Amino acid sequence: MAKRNNHRRSTMLSGAVMKVGRALWTMNAVPKKAVYGESLRSFSGTEFRRWDPSRSKLGAAIMRTRRDPSWLLPDEGTTVLYLGAGHGTSISHLHDHLCGQENELRGRLVAVDLAPRCLRELTHLAKSRPGLIPILGDARKHAAWGVLLPRKVDWLFQDVAQAGQVDIFIAACKRFLNRDGTGLLSLKAASERWTGEGEEALFDKVEYKLNTSGFEVEERISLTGFEDNHVLFAVRKME
Ligand SMILES: C[S@@+](CC[C@H](N)C(=O)[O-])C[C@H]1O[C@@H](n2cnc3c(N)ncnc32)[C@H](O)[C@@H]1O
Image 1 (cartoon, rainbow, N blue to C red):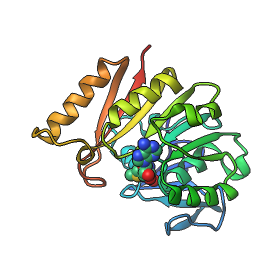
Image 2: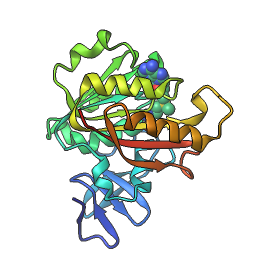
Image 3: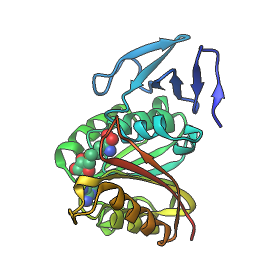
Image 4: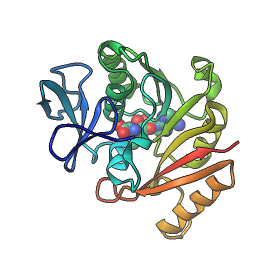
């Protein structure tokens, strides 16, 4: 549950994620270090990093959800799976929340990406952020890296921006997500093969497919304004 704190117009979404007016901040797990040029600022003597929602689908969804935004975050100190880690922008904020400084919360953030260049950056990031586990791998090929997740997780995020995103997500959730767990699928319309239908029709089809594949779509969050032509589907695994 979101808690109010002393800062005017500010809301703590977790121990480390704070919304101040229209801006999102996370408590910096590596003080004095920015990850992607974001601003650093002290609130009551504690340093926070500004989370730019136009560079992070997770950040954009937190800003756009019509529900209590904290429901999109995993529990602190748990193990989570993130497919399509990119250069680590969202990952770094998620790490602030999940692990904290020197991984005091004992979280595990398993971050998979196909691109060696991304892996180099993630590996560098992981040196100062214990709990972050970068994996060079294909989200579709579980056999190559699934051994690193011997138990299912309660939170899975996917942002691979490639054709077949929904099938990749469904297969990953079936294998790695606990029943009742939260799955977040960031869907880029342009990555799917064009079949002549409009974007909304494509999103409707995806929602139907998720709802008939053992999930309940709890919210379909349009990221327009932060990431045009993107929707984030937040689902609960039902079986
Ligand atoms: C849009 S970027 C991710 C950005 C990141 N989620 C963020 O918010 O900071 C998509 C990433 O997915 C990766 N990717 C694409 N297909 C993949 C696959 N099959 N398995 C793993 N990663 C994949 C790309 O290399 C790219 O880094």
